[in-house]
Image (cartoon, rainbow, N blue to C red; front, side, top):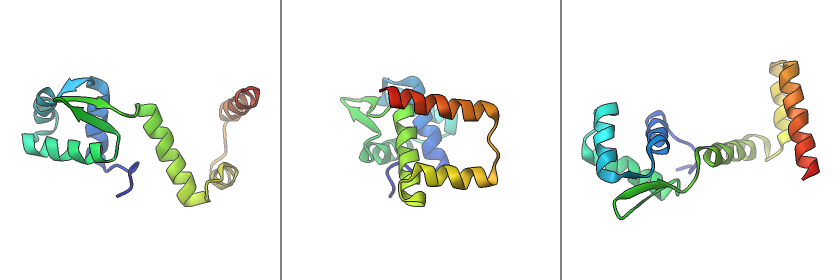
Length: 120
């Protein structure tokens, strides 16, 4: 199981937690019943899976995130780059831009990010 690859329902569940944390596990089961029509056991099974991946924690009946939504997205991106492009961002950009032309705004944003990184 890849820690940063989520199925559709896992992603929706994670979004629900991020949007409502900290949340009691009981309130989470009620919310999942309303949002997804899940039984309590389904919610706890899904929560256990995401806790095992160190994305969330259920401690003392309170569910909190171990990773922010942004940190998780960054980890997903790093895992993808590593798997598909040997960790090379330049190789990814070269492949991406062969299929899709970047807008001037996107080019400016990439330049700004590189400049900001160099200044740090």
